[in-house]
Image (cartoon, rainbow, N blue to C red; front, side, top):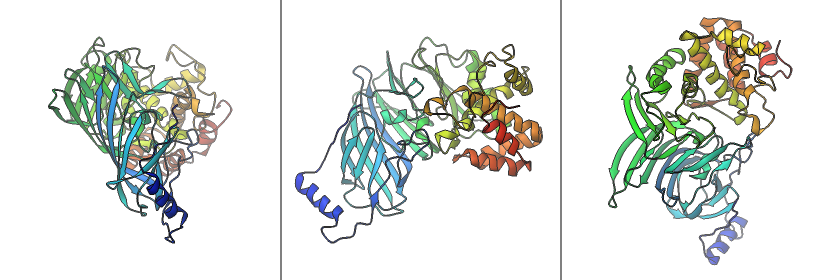
Length: 470
C-alpha cells in the first residue's frame, strides 16, 4: 500500500494556515476535524465522520489498453458539524488536485485516508462541494475472507465491485453503507466498448476523438459498495417487465445471452418479488455477466447484479434480485447487520422454490436442521457455527451462518406468527425502510411491534444464541 503526503500550498500559505489553526491570529476557529472512521465493528476505519454525502458525480476516462483511469469526483455533502478538515476513503491512484467550494484545498494521504483541509472552515449544516482530480492504475483489494474486490482488470476491460470497501479503489468517498447518496457516473471508453453501471443510461454519445461516452444516473440513494462499473465488449439486451420496470442487461462474450438460462426468467422474478416483498424499489433492473473467472462470487450491485459467468441456477439470480429490496433499498447501518441482507436473500430462494413447485420453506428449514442434502446441496454446512447477528470477525460477515442461519431466523418468525403476519412484516419492513438504513435492533423492534408477538425466544436462541438452536 502506498503512503504519500501531498501538499498543494507553498510554504508561506502553509505557515499562514498553521497560524490560523493554532489560534495565533487571535481568531476563533469554529470547525474541528471530522473523524477518520465510523468505528464500524468490523471495518472501523471505513467511512468518515462530520458529514453526509448527498450526491456523487464521477467523470471517468478509462483505456483498457494501458489500464489507466483518469477521474474527477465531485462530491456534494452536508456538514454535520463545523469542519476544519474531513476525510475521504481512497486507495491507491494519484491525487492531482482538490477544491472545496471552488477554492484550492490542502490535502494529504495516509494509507487509505485522504484528509482535506478547506481554505475556510465549513459551518454546521453547510452544503459543500468537493472536487478531486485523480489518475493511475487502480488495483483491487483482498477482503479479510480472501476474496478480491474493487477495480479488477479483465483481458478486454475491467469490472468494479465494492463489498465491503472496494469502491475506494476507483473513486474517493465516504465508503460505509450508512452514508447513501445519489449518483451520476460518466464513462469515456474506446469505440467498440460498452460501459455499464447502475441506474438508467441517460445518454450514449461520441466525443471529438471518436470515443464513446456513457452517462448513467442513479436517483435513488445507494451505498457506495453497491456502485459498479463493467467495461468491455458486452452484448446489451434491453426491455421491460410486464408491469413496466425497465430492463438493461450486459453479458460478456462467450457467456450466453440475457435471454437464455436462468437470466431469461429475470422479468418474471422481478414481478414475483414485487408481489412477495412490495414494489420493486428502483427504476431499472437487469444483470451484468462478467467473464467467468473474473470473480469468485456474485454481487447485488444496485439495480444490476454482477454474476461471474452465466448463472447456472435460478436460485442465484433470485438471491441477488432479492437483495434489491434487502441490502440495496434497505441497507445495513453497520457490517454487523449483514444477516439482514443475506438471511432475507437466502430465504427468498426458499420462497421462490416454494412458489414454483420445489421444496417448501418448511422443508428447507427441516433439511438444514437435519443436514439433508437431498433437499438442498448446502444443507450440511455449519450454519450454526456462530449466531447470525454476531459474526466473530470481518472475515465471517459472508460466512454460512449469516446466510443460512439468517434464513432460519426468518422461518422461525414465520412459524411463530403465521403466514399472514409474517408476509405483512416482510412487506412492511421493505416499505417503511425503503431507501434507508436499518440495524438488527431496528428489525427486532419492528418485528415485535408489527406482529404483536413476543419474539424474545427467537432472538435469544436463533439470532444471538451461541449453542445449536433446539
